Amino acid sequence: METVDNKQVERRAFLDFSVVALLATFFGGVFYPIFRFLSPIKTRPGSMGEEKFSIPLADVPEGSAKLVRYKDLPTIIIHTEGLEVVALNAACTHLGCIVKWDDETGRLLCPCHGAVFDKFGQVKDGPAPKPLPPIDVKVEGNMIWLA
Picture 1 (cartoon, rainbow, N blue to C red):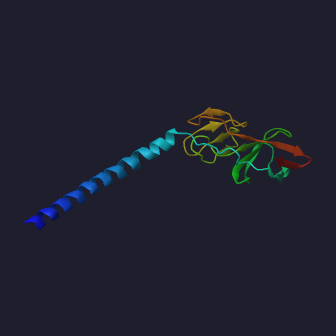
Picture 2: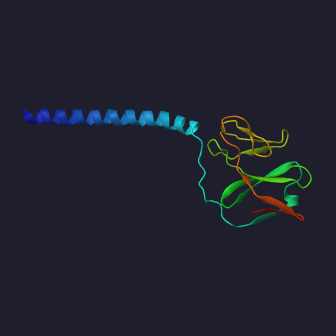
Picture 3: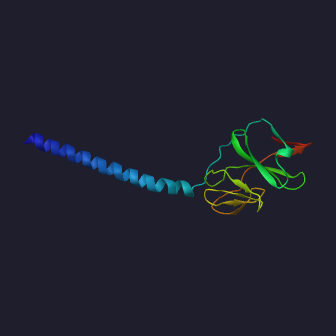
């Protein structure tokens, strides 16, 4: 009789463990995405190096933007008017999606959650908590330099 009771106890312990594991998986799967959606991404200090990056001014026509990789970060270079050029970290400050330039509105749009930034990276609409970090840029001759 004891062996039957031990098997029942072992089965019951296994079923209890299985139910707890299933519930933990379910609640983790539900609440983790909600938590990630509500919490802004954190940038790592000191991730910027000392390298320089250049691109021909002709590669970014006036009124357009170009996405490049600078110091292993997605960077968007925007050529606004004349020789005015702006460079911004292209990772949305909400959850890190890469923003896209909209030629019609002259704004940066986050495709994931609808954040909208102006050409200087300031938040205009959406869930993004902070503006896009600027990157030092200057135009020398017909070259754009990021430093």
